[in-house]
Amino acid sequence: MYVKKIIAINIAPTPKLKRVKGFKLTPSGIEFISRIFSRFNNLIEAAFKSEIKICASCGLKLYKDYHTETIHEKEMNFCCIHCAKVYKESYNKN
Image (cartoon, rainbow, N blue to C red):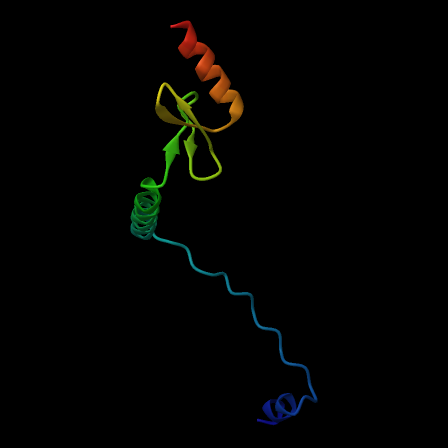
């Protein structure tokens, strides 16, 4: 009781607590977390899927800041002007 009083009025330093080891997931906990992350990933992907474009040349998925050109009256999306140039050159060869 005396020690608690001197700790309370800041006369003695508080005793150091033992380090807590923490928790580890069980195998079923790991499986549960994996399912939750998978569902979350699916939700994020579904939210962005309508806004994602694909580069016509290299197939890269594009979200924003992509290059657009009209080739033979069709609007095409490219990741960069270099892919657009390569696509036009290969399209002209055929």
